[in-house]
Image: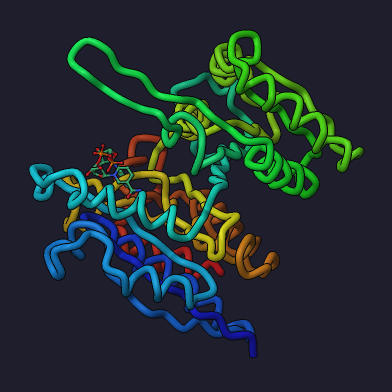
Length: 353
Ligand code: NAD
């Protein structure tokens, strides 16, 4: 029997509702396969602040570090908006990612055939899209020093060391090896020295992966190409700020923010979470789409636990469920057979396993 310890952080808003569905699906897997998941819950975000006065209690970091992977919901909400920055739920999440050293953020964007009409782009542009954004998460301009703001001047520093670029590039190439073996590195090397180093380093790393084709694209062009012809991309490798913007742009291709998972890896323990936030506007109503979180659980199996077959099973069960016409309210207008509640959709996906 394979047994895994999963640190579960449900968080705020719809977090608890959607994480429960991911656990339901994992448990359905363990009924069929020789596998056991041991869950331990920890607090983060507003829920942690309310209980302990700190959005990231030390116990959560310690618990996560002792586990095999972290399954995470979402944090934040109006209730905590007025707090000072370091007490806000979001600061807990940023500190958590740094504490775990997760420097690579993976965001797959896939379009399900049944939901092509939900995309803001035309069918002929999005049909068959299947790409992965690999974004550097703990460096670049968001963290570079010096940084300062005065009344009439402000600046930030975009800095990357060769080592930081190498390690994220390696992750992108490794992922490409398991996909179509194409990496497009996105930078702004026509203007920025930091991007020149990025490009040179990507070329160096590419030599270790002769089977993978490496191309380069300026970020302004990449943002245009993503809506012009997203199918041209397999793996997009990029830095923190460019990846932040491009991955949000790419996410809309799929039609609903409630569909897209993410993985933050590269550190001691991987963190798996939907790309969306805590959706306080629909929290507690049982209508949130759990697919992004269930799909994040599949990424956890794939990238942290090396249970590739089981990850594929979850992905197929999601695709089958959508094919059967079951959706939550966010996708109701696209020819659904039945609009389900959060937990009904979780039941159907678990059943389809
Ligand atoms: P959001 O992603 O929570 O919601 C944006 C819109 O999408 C809302 O209308 C919401 O109802 C809808 N939506 C989101 N997830 C959905 C789902 N699974 N099913 C159906 N509809 C869904 O973004 P926001 O409103 O800008 O932020 C709300 C809170 O979440 C803020 O406090 C923000 O800081 C926080 N946030 C947290 C994370 C995280 O935990 N990683 C990420 C982004 C935002």
